Image (cartoon, rainbow, N blue to C red; front, side, top):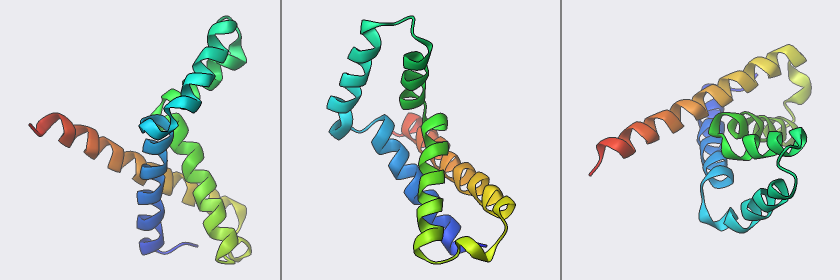
Length: 113
């Protein structure tokens, strides 16, 4: 099971990875390609799903956090130390903490001049 400092680190990385995937301009060309792909067949449910995924901090944050957690567990050799259910709970914890950081960032962004 991951420790609290690992949870905090993974939450911060999940927040930043989600911001990169959803908002940062460095990925604008890739997102523009996906939006153009969707516009060629806008009634396609799979394409609409992909657009929803890459546009939503909660949706993208869930998968970014899961990928980071899985990578962390595998690289540090912790994957086999706990049952899969525990890792699922860790995934909820990392994703939830990352979303909390995102909500704080959104709130402070509206308050700051």
